[in-house]
Amino acid sequence: MKLLNTINSPADLKRLQASQLPLLADELRDYIIQSVSRTGGHLSSNLGTVELAIALHYIFDTPDDRLIWDVGHQSYAHKILTGRKDRMNTLRQLNGLSGFPKRDESEFDSFGTAHSSTSISAALGMALAAKLKGEDTYSIAVIGDGAITGGMAFEAMNNVGVYDDINMLVILNDNDMSISPPVGALNSYFARLMSGKFYAAAKNVGKTVLPAPMRHIARKFEEHAKSMIAPATLFEEFGFNYIGPIDGHDLEALVPTLQNLKERKGPQFLHIVTKKGHGYKLAEADPILYHGLGKFCPEEGIKPVLAAKPTYADIFGNWLCDMAAVDKKLIGITPAMKEGSGMVQFAKDYPERFFDVGIAEQHAVTFSAGLACEGLKPVVAIYSTFLQRAYDQLIHDVALQNLDVTFALDRSGLVGADGATHAGNYDMAYLRCIPNMVVMAPSSENEARQMLTTAYRYNGPAAVRYPRGAGIGIEPEKELTALPLGKGDILRKGKNIAILAFGTMVNPALSAGEELDATVVNMRFVKPIDKELICEMAKTHPCLVTVEEGTIHGGAGSAVMETLAEEKLTHPVLLLGLPDKFIDHGDVGQLLAMHKLDKHGIMASIIERFGKIDDSGKE
Ligand SMILES: Cc1ncc(C[n+]2csc(CCOP(=O)(O)OP(=O)(O)O)c2C)c(N)n1
Ligand SMILES: CC(=O)[C@@H](O)[C@H](O)COP(=O)(O)O
Ligand SMILES: [Mg+2]
Image (cartoon, rainbow, N blue to C red; front, side, top):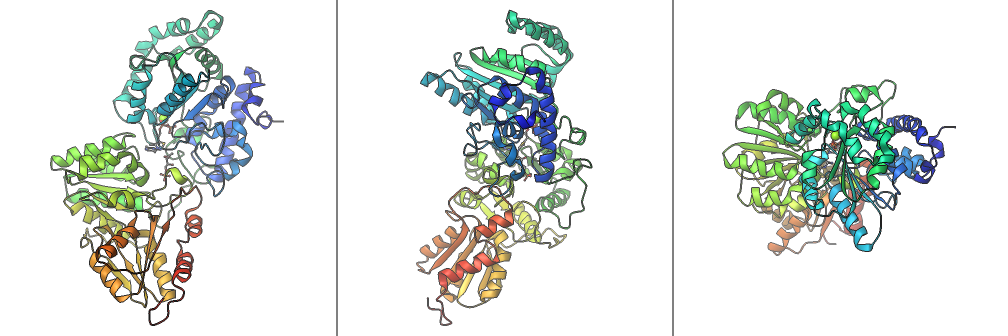
């Protein structure tokens, strides 16, 4: 009988001898590899936190002690140890387990995460709440060396340091990787902390920090001296008691160190060193490839497949290289998403014009504003969901000054397995209300290229929002052609009903329109919206329908309604799009169908709403 099969909760785990934990770690790691190979998910980060999850649940009293996994893409071992092993086969699928911690899913998920750098703030809130309520519980934030580069982490540490009587522990999981290799001065600082010159001071760390009964741990520290350093100045300056680095895969060091830290009051900081992909050679060798992946064969690993169609990220990446070749002023910026955003080739070809600023969306946007002030042409490649982080920077630093910044907004609309935290459902609503912004949504790869050119040539802030994954298979033209600003395109003329469609919804709308003999318009622009065309459609059709892959509330359909209201046109309008609720993980096609945003759903909604329309155009 495997040890892992005896663990249904942290209480079961606590019954094990400490000496049994390494065997459990091996079984757990193997289980994660097998399980992720069948579902897909975030593999490398999860393989790196197996020992940490075991040690934390072994020492702390979760869920009373609050455990927060920053980003949460490394929380699979935690999920398995907290009673969700049998549901791992449903991971990231419709109605299945989330790929991230989720409060609704388990009492052990103290805080929902997925966007990075939130854990220290949330843990401080919980630690202070415990203090105010007179509870003697602990709050623990586990944060990676990538996530700690996010500004919020520093805002939180600045705040933590003033409370010397809270029960709070921050664990820095330093695997020397973000999704890509880590960037920035902080990363160099961590590297310096690891360097030999701190070794001498490190020898004393164990003795000074650990009380007499724990002297054997001090010896252990000395054995691990190569991976240890002196108290780190930066975190101590922030008011933490800093310990480490220690080997985060060594349960013999991890368990007693955590036990010791648990007994101390005030903000504690433990620096552990782990390997991304630990224990699975292929992931260790290529942690980027194995960061987030689909199903794979564990023995053979990920097989390169020649994709039938390029993704929108590829289309963007090619456009970026082509535009950079003709305009030396182009600068490409990513907040830590080089691979996902399709910028690998650009980074190789134009290293001096490529900037990975780390997980720092706010900085990325204001940095681009600075570049634009000096006459350069920044292109910020950013996921729709992560631009939410930089909303004020977008308004205050870019749009208010009408600066010439292009936003390549990837992962707009539903994203599938990552679910509600990563869905790009809000950008049309949150962008179109900002003065000076131009907002476009392509219906094909070629249009994406044209819109990127349009945005780039427009002298002001402009965003092109395109979805995750591949398009409809239309090869983009080689030329860099701009579209006429604010003009839609009538795709078919029909009777009675005009469907005004945006972006990814143009094609299903066209199929529905053909069946219903409706007029179908590719609106192209969310802002400026084509008022002339909307009025023409209203004047020639008794009923209008808008369709968008985004929230209906405040979205592109609302822009159409506003135009009708301004023009005093009182038409019946059916607004189709995503409802006012968070949409969980699942296959995108499945989710679109569930929300009636495929051909059949669009037809059904139109018939349900306007079913009584006759040829004379009366409802
Ligand atoms: C605000 C935000 N920006 C970007 C991301 C995408 N992202 C997810 S994991 C990750 C890297 C995190 O690195 P680290 O914290 O070191 O964890 P590791 O992957 O090394 O385990 C990034 C950039 C995110 N989740 N949230
Ligand atoms: C956890 C996280 O934020 C990223 O790893 C994200 O899951 C990447 O998403 P894509 O797979 O769409 O690039
Ligand atoms: Mg890391």
